[in-house]
Amino acid sequence: MRVGLRSYGQRVIEHARDFAPLRRKINVPVWADLSIRIGAALALVCLVVMLHWLDRDGLVDQHDGHVSFLDVVYFTMISITTTGFGDIAPVSDRSRLIEAVIVTPIRFAVLFIFVGAAYNYVIKRGWEKWHMARIQDQLSDHIVVLGYGTSGTEAVRELIERGTDPHRIVVMDTNAGRLAHAEELGCNVIQADASRDVDLIAVRVDKARAVLISAGRDDASILMVLTVRHLAPGVPISVVIRADDNELLARQAGADNVINPVRFAGLLLAGSAQGAHIADYLVDLASVSGRVQLVERPVLPEEIGKPLSQLATGGHGLRVYREDAAHGFWETEAGTLQEGDIVVEIRPTAEAEAAKAKR
Image (cartoon, rainbow, N blue to C red):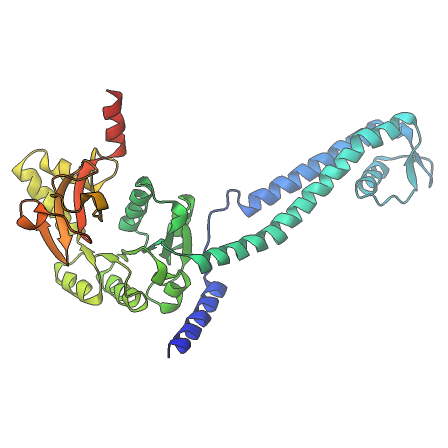
């Protein structure tokens, strides 16, 4: 049975690669690069035509003895392409010097332009496609973002600000315009339906560090949670759910974290009613761009046996998660940290630390 599942997964991956490959931003659009190359080549050709026309007295036409402008254009083209029929040839010393010193380097430049274009649009593009397929095959410990609307966009920006390499982020959405924005940030993108097994297997969802889901609709988000959980039983899943009634369904579908933006906004509003600065502090905690940040991490070896109030990082311990139970800093369980504990602490951001060091 396991062999059958593996072969099925391999077939699905190959199908996904054919129809929905990963993409990463190309610095210069294809049409712009091609236009630049053609424009540069035409400019060099025009320069050679001008030089030959100004020095037409140094050329001889074996056909009728008269070198017209058309003859100059003709001679320029056969000279640059190294065809050389011999019907028109430079005979004066100055014309031969121009051919040797000016036209020959331009000839090489034109050839390099077109050879470079062939490299870019045949060899390089093929290599990039192969390279992206290799990236797709070797994806591991990455973050998969399903849905790139408002919440997904903010999540990706925050991840990058927190130090996550954009190349370790894979964004999946059906909207090409949204994906173009994610590409600008340096993320890997794939235009696909995140509720389909074939597309999720293509981005190695089972090897991901975490999956963030924000489909814009609760039913679509819950379906994505079900699909991801089916394919990746051990991967943490966070999902945005907007209706209170659907939060339980999302958890039953397999979500580890259910985030309700409406409820969070209500918490901020309620906090502002209790004090002018509570809401500001909550926002500060949620963003890495603030002065403080919440950090979740495993307990360090040197912290085992010590209380939560004496963390090695210098942060203030808030909670200990032990065997799926949460213990606050005031509880007895937080008095002695144990191996396997997960610590949630609050500490200054890097910017705040840097500002403190300058004082």
